[in-house]
Amino acid sequence: MLPRVRVERSTRGRAVAPGNPRVRGGRPGFCRLFRRVRKGDTADAADLWHHAKPGPRLRRHIPRVHIAADYPARSQVPRDHAAALERSAPGRARGAGGERGRSGTLTDAVRVVAHAKVNLFLRILAREAPTGFHQIETAFALLELADELVVTRTARDVALTVHGPDLGPSEENLAVRAARAVLEATGQKFGVALELTKRIPVRAGLGGGSSDAAAALHAVNLLAGNAVPSHELLHFATRLGTDVAFFASGAPCAVAWGRGERLFRFAPPPAMPALIAMPSPPVGVATPDAYRWWDEMHPDPHSRGPVVLDAEAFAAWGSIGRLGGNDFEIPVFGKHPPLRALFERLAGTHPYWVRLCGSGSAVAAVYGDKRRRDDAAMTLGEKRQGLIKTGTLASPPAGPAPVEVLP
Image (tube, rainbow, N blue to C red; front, side, top):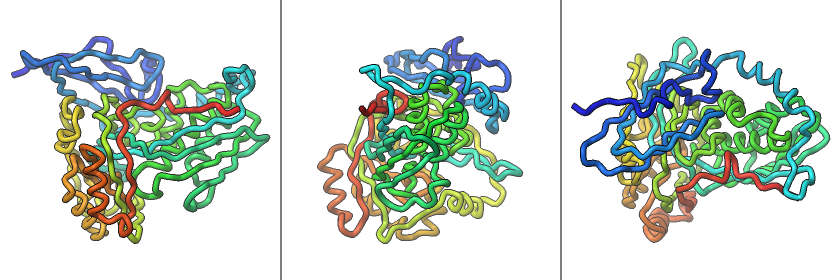
C-alpha cells in the first residue's frame, strides 16, 4: 500500500475558498491535500495553488501525485464577512480616487477581455435540503473566445451598452450588478458606463455572463484605486454566481466543488484548437431547468464522495477525456434530441475530447491540430450549424483580469 503523506506543513488547513487564510475562525472551506509517491517516478511540476491572499503561491515538484480533496459537505462562507468588508472598504478607498496610469494621469477607462470556459467534467454530488441547492464538482478551462468590456468613469449611476444579442433588462445583468457592488462597498461617488461587445454565445454553457461579471469587478475596482483587495473581491464573485469566482481568480484551469466557489488550480494542458458547435435553430437551456431535469431523474439521490484526481490526468487532452463526463448530458439530451444528435456527430469527428458545455446548449471539442478541427467543421457543415473556431489557453491571462488602461 502506498504511503499517504501530507504535501507540506504549510498547506495544512489552508483555506481554498475566497478569504484570508490567516483568519482562523469562520473560514469558508478547506482542502486537505495528500500525495502518494511511487518509487521510480519522475518529477512532474504540480501547481498547488490557492487564490486566497495574502499567502504565497505554493509550487512544488512532486512525483506522480494523487490529489484527494477532502472537503466539507457545504460552503461555510460567513454571512457577516461581506457586510464587514462593505463597512471597512470606504475607509480604505478614501483618497484613492482611482488608479493612475504610467504617465501619472488619472485612469478614466479600462478595457477587459472576458474569456469563455468549458467544463472538463461536471459531477453533481448532492442536493442540499431544504434549499434545494446542488453541490457540484467540476473542472474549468479557459478558451480564447472572449467578450470585450470597456468600463469608463462617469458622473453617477451604472449604464450598460451591449454590442450583440439582446441580454434583457440591464438591472438583471451580472456585469451591472458586479459594478454596483464594488461602487457601493467602497463608497465611491462616481458612476461607470459599461460597453460590452458580446462574442460568447448566450445561454450556451460557456460562462459568458459570469466572465463579464468578473471582468466588471476587476475593472471597477481598478477605477476605484484597487480599494478592495483581490482576495476580498472574490467574496463579491461568489455572491454573484457559481462560475464568477473561477473567472475572477485569474486561473486558466481549476477544479471547483461545493457550489463552485471553492477552487484548486492546476497546470493547464497544452493549448489546442477547439470547435464550439450549437444546434440550428438555437436551443436555449437555462441552468435551473437543467438542474430540475436532473432532479426528476434522481428523486432520492445519494451523496457522492470526492473523486481522487491524478495530477497527470490533466497533462494531456487524451487523459482528460477519461476523467468523467458531464452529469447534465443525459437529462439535457433527453429533453433536446437535436442536441444529442449534434454531440454524436461531433464525437464522430474523432476529437481528443468532447463534452456538453456546462448545462448546455453548446457542445465543445478539442483537436490535435487546426487541420483536424477545420475538417470537422466542414463535416458538420458550417452553414447548417452554429460553429465557432477557437482554442484552449495554456497560460493564464495577464493578472487577475487582463486590463488595458485607456488614455
